[in-house]
Length: 291
Image (spheres, rainbow, N blue to C red):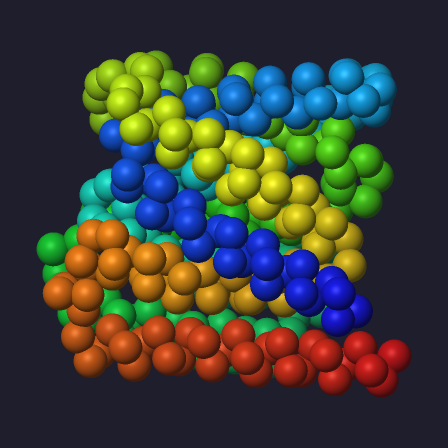
């Protein structure tokens, strides 16, 4: 169990880089995600083919995994749109609402009893985010995109946990990327009506940033998430991912000097978010010991 939690926190640390990369890459959020999924799908297909690990599934199985991948694609689009409409700090802090949405959605989807304790921990996170948002009112659009992003990720994590139990992790990642890529390709024309997508290809340092994002922050991270979600409840995983803002904010302070925009209210909000993660992790570990 300790190994599973170590893998969980390693995945959170890696996830901390994605927000920074999203701002560094100059592509529109939808185009960025399209390239991310296309390159990840290509690399995973080559790897599985060359190592003779590619499993041939029926169409309904492929559709199941692909549908989960579309949820992930939409989460990424709104996540990077939030960062580009505001800054890295706002985008990643909004992600902390994942625990709140999971506490609401998981009992409905998995048909189990509503947990008052989980909802209480989530409200602590919501209070933290409320304090964070007091420090500036310029980023309302970025905040809106961030809230949608966190809701989509909560839904993805819950569904991914249910579907992932039936498939090999590496093959599932491949078909999630393919499904997300196909779905996003169909939706981009509609997206372009509301938000012009601009340039369709990377330039300059975009290639290096994309390579790191695909290999480490997509393939490596998603494999870790699939493995972790098979061992640890979705709510605990999602709430632990509230630590992602801490890593991203520290990085953005050094790279983009975002510390100039933060104040005491922001610091108190982040402290509450971290506290909610610590309390949930301690409680979950105690429950495992009594089983």
